[in-house]
Image (cartoon, rainbow, N blue to C red; front, side, top):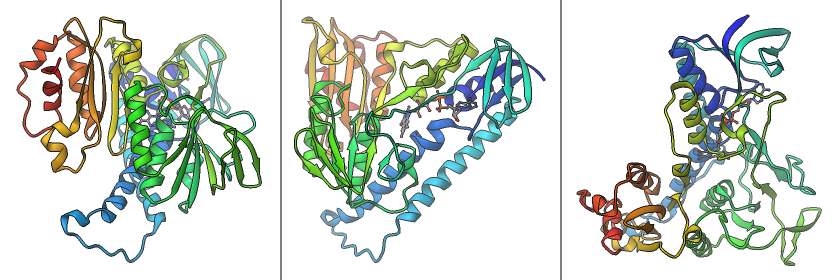
Length: 407
Ligand SMILES: Cc1cc2nc3c(=O)[nH]c(=O)nc-3n(C[C@H](O)[C@H](O)[C@H](O)COP(=O)(O)OP(=O)(O)OC[C@H]3O[C@@H](n4cnc5c(N)ncnc54)[C@H](O)[C@@H]3O)c2cc1C
């Protein structure tokens, strides 16, 4: 069997490259050992956002007294939440499978390995290809001494399959995965503890974002321990280095992901590169490879979902020299936030010489807002150019103008 391209991995990087190359007329075969859609669709972005959405509805039902709604809940079946999440994933996966088929790319459901620079082996077959693309993704990182046993120490894959809500959970790590799961469990009423080895929650974020998340967690009674890690586990009692003891139903270990690497030098896309481990980055890398559409690596947005959303791009305050100016607009300045009962957060802009160098947003709709700023940054619009935009009222977008006129 001969193809122009053999792609190992059917996640966002692999299926995007595969479909785009096939649509251009190349013969393409994608090897997938599990399910098309990869981590993002089956174990990552999509299932977690479905669960997050369900948890937010659950929480809202119990917080609707301020609009005069007196709700009594007769029963709650968590297995329906899981079922809805699974249905969402299956629905999207079916569309994806059809789109890949329609593009003309072939899919072989089998583990694949590279034999040499033009040969891939899958099952008993050898595939001769002109180019190999390795897009095998990444796997959850195991902490030494806290290996996954899939019962008490869970990975981000395992936790998607729980059938019962825990009463108490300990989350190790406060990156995007840890923060989103803390929100999911807390919304459902689980007692949540987070242990973070760094000085602040969400350590990769701008310092004001980290501090705000800490404040929000405190308000929501999500307990967190900073500069901390597990000292010992005795049966199900966990003792942290700080001396605090917790008796969680289970531990979710969310300490990052390890890239899978090819045995032979070839084109590598997505998480396997070990760079920015985000689905949209994987997709954009594939678009560049297949269509030559360029991107600016310094303008890749980060988004963390939940209420309020967190999004950022570009330089953090700590990355800037003296010439930078920081503007911070609390979302309480925006009428829309009061209408939505969502007044927690801010829009923070880092400016240098009338240009936006970074944006850090904690706000409802932050995931949409950040793109307005990226478009401005990518097109080198000045702060004065942006001020000329007529932002609709009442919106969160008008916060960009409100922030800029404070510069
Ligand atoms: C809980 C969680 C939440 C996330 N949320 C977000 C989010 O909200 N937004 C975001 O942008 N990113 C998110 N991510 C990250 C995102 O899922 C990844 O960045 C993205 O999936 C990377 O795409 P990829 O194609 O490189 O790899 P993957 O999606 O991991 O796909 C790789 C595929 O290769 C297959 N494979 C591996 N080895 C072989 C082999 N030898 N033969 C055949 N097939 C093989 C795997 O089965 C897999 O399907 C999240 C991740 C997790 C774990």
